[in-house]
Length: 198
Image 1: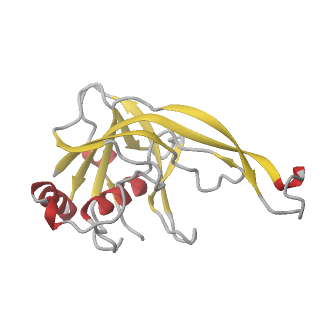
Image 2: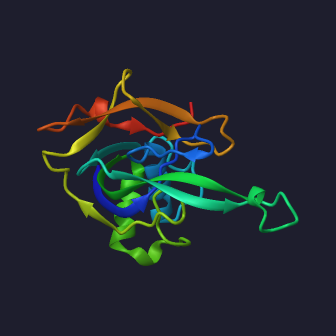
């Protein structure tokens, strides 16, 4: 098993059923973190590490802000016509700082990538979700501190997060979670999410 500590200055973890108002989850879904880890080791095949288990703990709940932007859409030949632009809202989270625990063969691949970065063939900057949401730092770490906030599986939890993302939208898989602050690490079966498509 391997723990990584990750920080990112600004991100958006878009709620999949959000439309004009681009809502964001307060924390990254397991599927988002899984995608980031695949990018870290330069793996393009998302099914290569199916079965890996991930646990997430946060230093604090990131702050949320709502951005107002103006977007352009072509509806009139007169480019200055009011119908060609409309307001657009997007929620972003700032100060993302978390630990991810990895159980499975992906953990050894990541450890090897840190030991010898020249073996990794990857493209673009390392991001958490959207391409512009760049990681600030990522490093091998010990277990999260005692005051960490854990993402815990809970049938009555208020967060419905994906553990497998299908970009056609038909086969994504979701689980309910809660965020809890514990003085000790919760039971493994409550914090580890298995990445799979079934």
